[in-house]
Image (cartoon, rainbow, N blue to C red; front, side, top):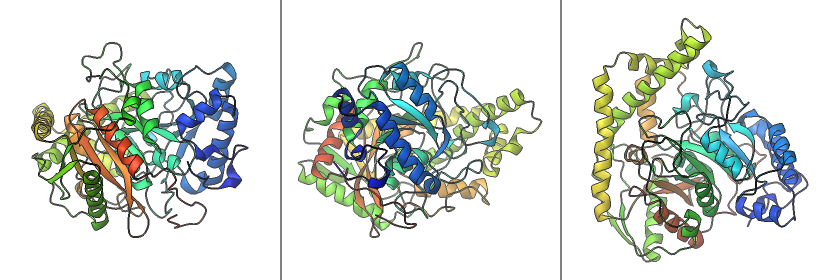
Length: 491
């Protein structure tokens, strides 16, 4: 599908980046390449580019070697290298530091349900990717580990909070990587790194065995990938209710992968290029969304300018309350476990302020904030009675220079306003639980990747995969890769 980013770093398998994860697994099944050779290819790229990009924070490739030696399960991705995000995903015997000094030595005793399903699919997990502290930023610049850099221009952020994962995929370490999304944290960095990022409907992917939901159900795990089919096939492998889940998402009779090659019926698409918060939107972000709207019309869909009809200001206020109230007890419990008198002193200043604010809130504030999320679900539910899909820019801004969105030197108010100005479009799909995706359909005037954002009604994940497959066939992006090795090179 494409030529390698740098053929001198092929680890003995020069065709590594010519294939997506599905294609690599097919080669393993056919005996044309071994899982060890794929791991070697991934590690060669990591050694070549990781000093520059800093996408990874906890490496354990020896566990990947051991898994291969012991015999990998037969699955859709047997032998394919894979990465976990360093927050929320437990893998036995590995550190889960969540980007924080407070959790720097936290080692998981067992695999989480999702990780166990990844292993059962045959994936070879070799590292965890960089993330902002507690995944609470749209840039990946944790003080505990240092910043990740965007492979398209190393002066820029890859986004966040899954920026380590998207930087690694964009750089060719792996063809897809695990992410999570609580306000846009899969879709924003996917847009900034030129990838396909998909947030499933709430509870399609489980968070067990310990947690049922995170930040009142807004945080949704999945992946960023080069190809749509990889993303769909991974959701087939990982999705489905966990034991004891109190509720679950509707599941269709057919696989998500089968939807990718199916042409969608003519869709009615609502298009909103204007920020629901009234904040500025970069002209390149608007232009790419407009080009996506035109492409959809060329493909036989109807596109209408519309207002999505929800209160984004109420959502912004509610998200702050819910996140603070969820982080505060985790910090307190970790502090108690370590015998710390002041665990807040181990946090970045903005997050310490956020936790301190949450400690002073009454329980009624949290209940009110959760009710705002329910109002968002009702609003989008009504919207999707009239439209099949909502189209918008993914981000309000292009990939920002490092430091722009970082918390250092900012008050919580200033940090939070910048957070929402950067990403005013995505969070309503977390609040409502509806599926959404960023599709890499354009570039800025300077050659940076820019995504277009599409969302659908709750449980309509298959419909989005149909549309994504159609868009991918019409405007292929697999071969559009960054050139690495020169600082500030846009590719």
